[in-house]
Length: 297
Image (cartoon, rainbow, N blue to C red; front, side, top):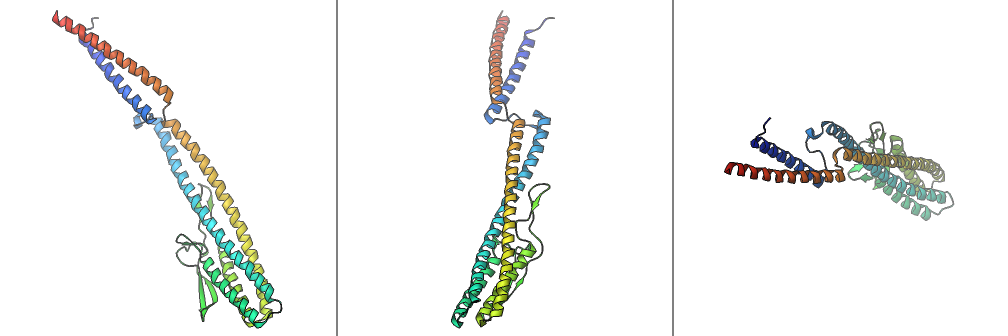
């Protein structure tokens, strides 16, 4: 079978075009570090990559939730711990008040306790950002409202709800980083105990002081338990953060394995393709020269 010069030329042109396309693709892979640019490059790998990236987005959201939960939990702990400090001082005053006090001493302690009441109300209405911490899921309203007589707080009501903030940390795990209703109501009771302590000191009422002192001990027990529970929640959140970080790193490696090129191997292929391309160009030049001579002759 006789092969014409035109057929040979057409074959070489086609080969040069194919090598040029392959060379451009390899150069892009080397420069970007990626091997897939269109779904048709590797449909199976693209499908796996999309699934992995979907899971990555979920992990990112869970990690964001964990960060938010830890911040809320830490802010809650800070508020409770500050109230515990107030409780410690109130218990000291109650113990001092149970002894023999002059009227002026009793009045001085009553004045101090009145300031502790104001401080506790402020702490009980603590916010993280714009969200109130101790009102359940009623985040936009101060959870504790005071009734005043002649400027002094005489009663406190709870305006929050019975629900808890809940954030998902995985498909099967959620966490409530703030306090439950029982703890929130105990804060209201603690404020009532402080009011009773102040009023008993104000009137130098020894039996009232004894009752207030016992109630303050009960309130402090609840505060200590709440702080311990909060610490456990923080530990749990941090454990989930570690798990999410490990899974995120694993997913990044899996995605990289699907879309990234093997750089040393790709550089070798690029070099081979460039060599073949140059050889094809040289062959085309020789054939063109032969064809020109045949034409002249």
